Image (cartoon, rainbow, N blue to C red; front, side):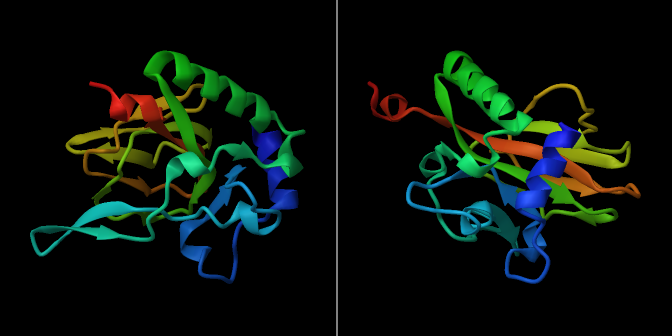
Length: 185
């Protein structure tokens, strides 16, 4: 996976000077009609809920995770294509769902996210990590080691911090339900 990460970074480097800088994200999937290089960065961010003065508020741009259903052709040659196909099949069979956006997300050393919740759960596949990188969901704190995909129920309040001295990079995808699920019964 580290080799695939290097291949993607050659095609779509981590954002440096732009509105996307704070996100440190590279998209592996895109909306229909988007093209490179913009498609690698267009899906950064998303909608989430956070607490302000004891009240829950919605932040960021609203987007439909299911719109990001096309793997970006410029990176089809990387191992991430195999990972994507494997996760897509797994989510379809195990959750009767589909993948939303698939992104590489980097957390730099001594950095953290806000306390927030997402509209849907996420799968995390650690690529680069360190023992100081932790995921916090409600009152549970866990290091996500390399070597497997981790289901994280991020509809609950959560954060992530990297208290280590090296970057943390995960492949992250949302898990959405098929349209038929929302219209049943």
